[in-house]
Each structure stands twice: as C-alpha cells, then as structure tokens.
Length: 371
Ligand SMILES: [Zn+2]
Image (cartoon, rainbow, N blue to C red; front, side):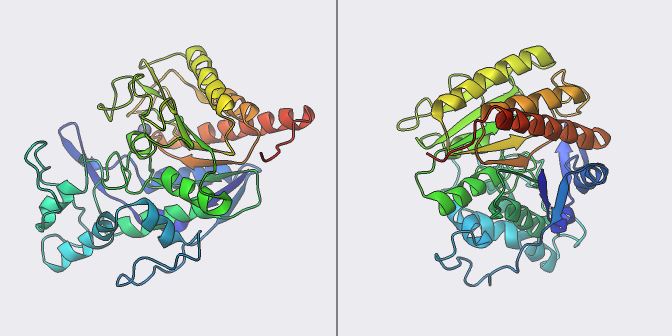
C-alpha cells in the first residue's frame, strides 16, 4: 500500500479541555510518529511529501485553472473567513501580546443559540468561539501549517488504485466553517473536491466513516447531495452528541444517501462486522466511482476516547471486508485513534486485510471498470 505523509503535519501541538481538565491534546504528533515507526518494519511504501508554498494571503484564491491546487481545494470547500481565521489568529494574538508564542488558543465563550450575532465578531476570543464548536481544538503556532499540509495527501494525483494518507489533524468533525473534535479542515470534503476536479463534478463518491465518533462535519456537507453517499458506523449517543441518529437519512435531493449505523459502546467484533457488511451492501447498491474511507482506530477496546470491543486482528477482517466489497479507486484518510503503541499494529492489520481483499478480487477476475 502506498502511504503518504507530510512531516509538516507534526508541527501542530495543542491543548484541550477534556472533562474538567486542561491537558495536552490526546491528538498528538506522536500518533503519526508511532505509525511511521511501525510502518518502517513492514513492506508498505511510505512516501514523504511536502506541501508547496502557500499563495500570498493578499490573493488567497489561486487560479481556477489548477483543479488540484492545494489552496484552491481549500478555498472551494471551506469558508474564506474561517480559513483566514485559522491562518492568522495565533500570530495576531501573539503580536498583540495576548498570548506567548508557545501557548495555544482556546475559545473563551460560544455564541448564544438564539441571540447570536449574524457575523464573526472582532474580538479575538469571541472569534475563537465563533469558529469552533468545542474546546478540543486549540490553535497553536503550528496548527495552520500542519492543517494545510495534511490536505496535500488528499489531493495527490497518483495512478494507484488505493492510497492511504496519514492525515493529521483529522477532519470528519470539521463543518467547513467551524473547528471541533481535533478537526480544523475536513479532509474527506477536500478529497471529494479533488476527485470531482479530476473526474468531473458528477462523480459518484461513497464515504465510509469507521471512526468511533460520528462524522458530523462530513454528514452536514453532503446531507442534500445526491452524488455523495455517507455511511458511518459509530458509538451511539457518544461525541459529537448532537448528530449520528439512524433517522438522519439526508434531505432531497440527497434523501437516502446518508446512512448512520449507531452501535452501543463495547459492541462486539462479530456485531460490528455484521453491521459493517450491511453498510457495505448499501454502498454496493450505489455503485460509486470512488470510495473514501475515514479511518479511525478509536474503535479499539482500550481507546481512551472510544471503545468498541475490537482488537488488533479484527482490523484485518474489517480491512478485508471493505476491500472485497468495493474494487474501485479508494483513498484512506486517517481520523482518530489514541492508543499510541497500538495505532501502528491496528493500522497495519487493516492494511493487511485490505491487501487480502485485493488479492481475492484479482483471483476472482473481477477487474475494476470505470462506468
Ligand atoms: Zn474519533
């Protein structure tokens, strides 16, 4: 498997409010370095990539001619004022003497639900609350550079049938106007834009979200989209709390394209795989041109933020089932997973299963043909 990694993604390091404690964020650079250490012992090809220099902030929207331009993909998928906030807020606050350059910024308050302002306020602390929906997504000195760099993995044009991007920070909670759940830009949304830039705006894309937490951001973006199917298996009534119910099925013209499969905490591997098979059948009925997998490992039984009863060998079964059901182009994007010393083995098991699924496809002579 080709695995893409940009070292700039390691520059993001921040704090979060977890329960009643302010702690170094569990979503840490060590997540990626532990995966890289593990992958170095395997046969997978890890390719180091580097984001190109950023376009001038005075002309943030790059020419429309380059469909895969990193900043253009960001500009067409996320709101301009939100991106400007991510890009500038830390340096501005440090220059104004509000924080030390080594500190992280967290919101101080959030807009009232019914009486909130209609546009972003000017006060920097108020803006932090406007552009975030929780206190798990602090902004440090390296946050913007890391966030922007993680996008390149999505847009990398590569003539491979499946690619894994070690996206960090993760993406599926970002709504494209607000950060939350460790997510600053939605990597799956950017990847969809990249696929559409390459293959046409009507490309049919399925997103399979296997993180323990519901991908509220991804669901929201495609809730009325008839060309993007979103299927998520996640912890019932868990973070992000307000989304992820079975009844959320999408709205016209995307009605029926949103499939939520909430499962109880400590759900067994047998039940999980059974429910996964159901989700895969729905995707098979859609016959997408491309599959994106939001791949989280906080479904692991020891994860501090998640927890189904999945163990390392189960990820091999999961990877195999997913690949066996869809033989077309696929992009795997890393989401959560917080047991540092098990992230590599769990990801490795998933990739091994994926490769087994690939072999089954080829042995069966079922070659992928574009519709
Ligand atoms: Zn998660």
